[in-house]
Length: 126
Image (cartoon, rainbow, N blue to C red; front, side, top):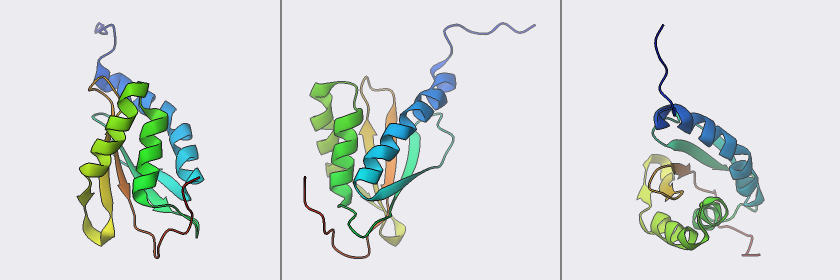
């Protein structure tokens, strides 16, 4: 019988951690007028695609700012994480913008691709 390592290796626990985050991430995305799809293995990071779903979807930067604010593990880190994610955005094909949010501790991270809206965001900051 093969012995199992304890504690479990991070690669084995990250998918469960990321899956547990999904409902709250989706709630934040929906607040901003987006839906959220998971893609990738969830081993190294949590790959997500945010798709504008309502006429009043906010800007991608506002969405990313609030995801960082709500989901970073340390209150002192969220503002820095949000600023870094927005500052290091990558432009991708079809107008997609890719952001990386570090959740704290240098370990778990979100890689979120945000699809563009078809027009200007119409909802202002609450």
